[in-house]
Image 1: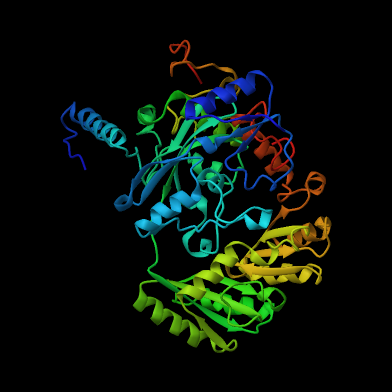
Image 2 (image 1 turned 45 degrees about the vertical axis):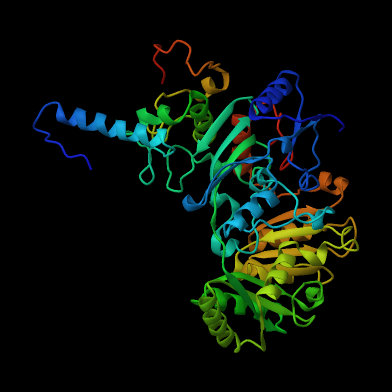
Length: 404
Length: 105
């Protein structure tokens, strides 16, 4: 893949897709390409590089709304929001270090197209829940819009929900409007030390069920704890984050610490340590180092109450940790190039959930499913939706599933 | 809330027209047609104030993916009914349907 089309504006995106459609070319849709190695290896002729579509086009802090061109760097948006004490509340996680790049890269379009959501998802929702409006070019080379710039909107079908997490297989987004929210003034983290996985999941469930308004709940088992920043000691840590106004954070962290004493010894992280810890959770730091990079990495989402059961069904030689109060498992397999997809898929199938092979060599990703395999009816529906937007398979064909 | 006297023959129509004017202004200033109850039938014919033919065709193709035979709530949400097969083939230019006077089902 050598040729790159780099449109300068939305009209040129439409022109590029129209040309590809007429010439039977398939396009790899990319922003900065930071997540290029995630998904099935693409069988495309050219790259449609949307990083030229950059810039915030509307930001009204008092209305909690921001619009930007799809290729706008996330870092630029986060800096702008930060200057106004606001943030993207879905806390997009950072795949950079995990996939061999640097931290803090990526575009808004990429975050939305992959529904990239971090530890705060359990409280604030996913990227898709903050995605208000879009203009995009379908694989029919037609520019369409959906949604708007207001939260209360049920006019017509909500195409934003469909495009979030579609990995560029339906349309190339050119303009995106998102909801932005006030940033917490401070944060703190309560650590429960030395719990095994089952007990940790019970502690996280108790914390989430409390009135402490926990905005992050992760369990970092003994064997990976030393990789995380901000922890007082390199031992199993169950981390519970509270965010908000200083008096409220103080009160809630004390209430939470009191509640957690029945599970094990409790330690407290101040704001600086807490930020460092959750940044390393967001970057999946144990599995982002050079030494870990050859090992296939799975991301499994399930019901928080089932996380531990799935973990128990996976080979004990794998390394793993839990986010989302037990509902998200990051699993690094023990051997290079060996994803052991059969046993992972079987565990997820019997217990419930979705597994994504986030990292593996291209040959492995071509040979096994990267995204959760679909049942026949869902597979047929996905194909019909794809055909509606992109009947000739111009945009990221096969990125998620063969034929879609 | 628009109050009217339904005993007077033209008041219902005028109230509905007035409601439509309000919604058009909402869209003009960056708002939307509906925030709670959806489009249904009453706001169906205003969809083209907010969406182009291309926008509406994209939505209807999603409907076709779920409901190829148009069995579910036909006549709601979308101002012009299309056959699903037709949405795949028809070419719309400049936001105008070809042969708009031909009845569509």
